[in-house]
Image (cartoon, rainbow, N blue to C red; front, side, top):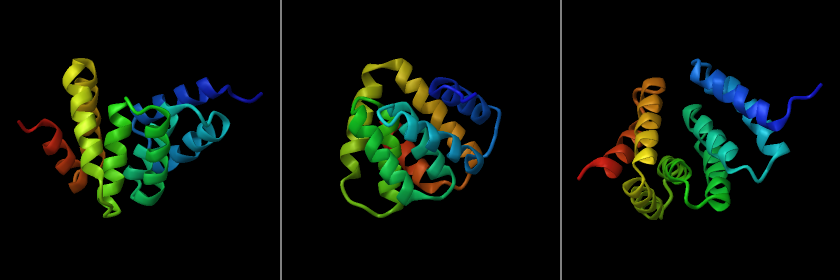
Length: 140
């Protein structure tokens, strides 16, 4: 029996939260994206996993898709900005500014982004791009 897209996504998230490596979870989220290509949350997760696994070009493509599907998702914007930073592309400031506005008006999103950044830095402590983005988002 095949897993539903929802159960595959939920299982992938649980495995991630349990500390499983990005590398082993990428195929799970790729399958979710293949089977449900309009699910922005899956593209957000896939972009994040690619970033953790040092695949910024793939993260950029997944991040673009996530932002296109849901332009109001601050994590999608942040992932795309990170991928742009790591692939030395221009225009990432727009995504940082929009993410900053979104988290400014929604405290829950702000907390989620802070947790996400801390998680990213705990999994990849020398992640300079994420440290830069964190400073841009939260320094007053």
